[in-house]
Length: 216
Image 1 (tube, rainbow, N blue to C red):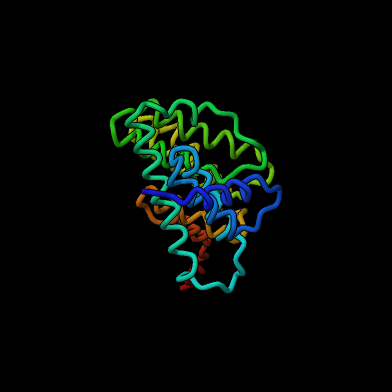
Image 2: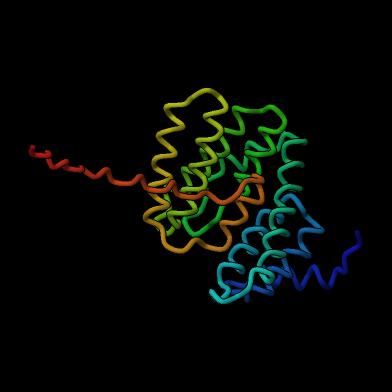
């Protein structure tokens, strides 16, 4: 695909700006993704998530769904190529900045790696995601919960049931404490082809019934 050099220059200027407008940043990243896809695809997905999360609560799903679908698509392409070329170690071990996130590229990478049978690397990717989310004070509880649930599912598939159960308990506790979920959390469901997690219904509190003895 041919790209206008002038458009690339404009994109570079926007990317170098300290405080670019969100829409301009997304457009710039789309352009740069055609030039350096493996560098800019994860950045584009992150920018799309940030854009969606900045929408007003009343924004209809029809306005956000295409953006999240685009983010999922670019991350699938990026992760597939990273696995194909054995270029997945650096994203897993790279130190993540405190103000970065969400790091759904690690979730996409984990899914792609497990799909090709590289189970150890897939687990390492999701563990890196959980570690990064735990280290950030600003990480929404629901976002960390989704990462924990995916890690728990992977451990269950490896017959590590006790460890998986512990992670699920933590995730459920976080979901109970969490407020409204960021819209970008839906990207996790798109990447894993699984519905959003739901809290288990609370068990009814047993009541003690007293039987009055019948007098004859």
